[in-house]
Length: 174
Image (cartoon, rainbow, N blue to C red; front, side, top):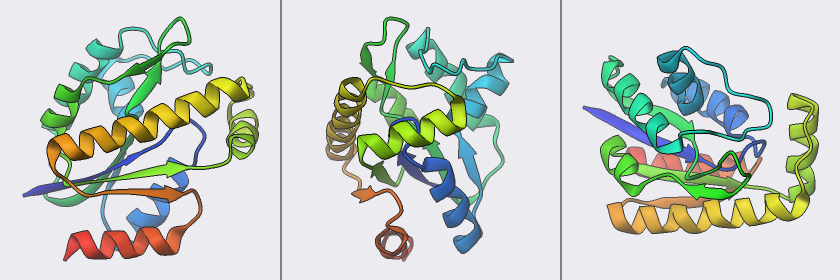
């Protein structure tokens, strides 16, 4: 039986680094929602992270996940909200998360200045700090709503707080 831990957080918060650590520590596979969607669509996302067709992309994600031959625990890193083509914070539909059926959620958060720095180094793009703050707040609030709707555990973690994240994962994997 597949058991997904969904790792959420805004762009540049450290999801990939966390997932690499957790995947190695627990010997479980890690998948990136954006990479699965890109592979399914045979397109590459732009560096500015403005996403067209947010709802359509979720169908690509669902189709891609359905083809994965994973049994047991795995990680999926992705988002609860995205920026649309107009730089507006847009929620990914609740139905997407119902279809994904995660067993638990971890949301990473960090100082906006740290996220900006990471993003700038990685992608050479600088987001407005006010937009990033609102984006991160929306991501966490919506993750809470999804956790409540799906009745699954949620842990909001400070990026880099590996110890607390491992304690949470140990508890849910029992």
